[in-house]
Image (cartoon, rainbow, N blue to C red; front, side, top):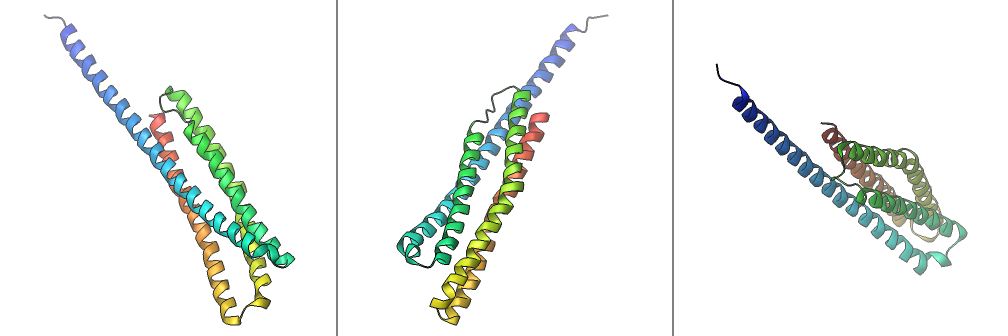
Length: 191
């Protein structure tokens, strides 16, 4: 009877090759997921920064000469957006620090740490930002009402509330996309 050493070596080489392919596949998938997450976060920061710039421009051009209520409303809206942009930028820095070339256990720890920070942002800060911004919109509309016609006021109410809903939608959409990608990365790193 012959030895099974040649068969065993062929089996071992096949097993290593598939695990190397699997590791490469996981690594490429992790790279793609992180790249997508960074791109989505970039667009979220861009949209929020554009909105912040428009509000700040309006404040410095017209709002600073308005009533106290107008100044307060614009300050609430601007400050809520500033806080959100700062939170997103710090998260972006944390995302850039994720290293896919770490060992699996270290990569899992870094993803879990990032997930914990993002959960805290979305569960604690996001509702507060929604409320502060919404309060700013309401106060802004109240401050404008005596100076504009009824038709324009109704238009401002509809667009103000519409923008607020759009603001919530953008943040929630980015949150859901981010959450799906992070969960996929966590699942990949566990395999």
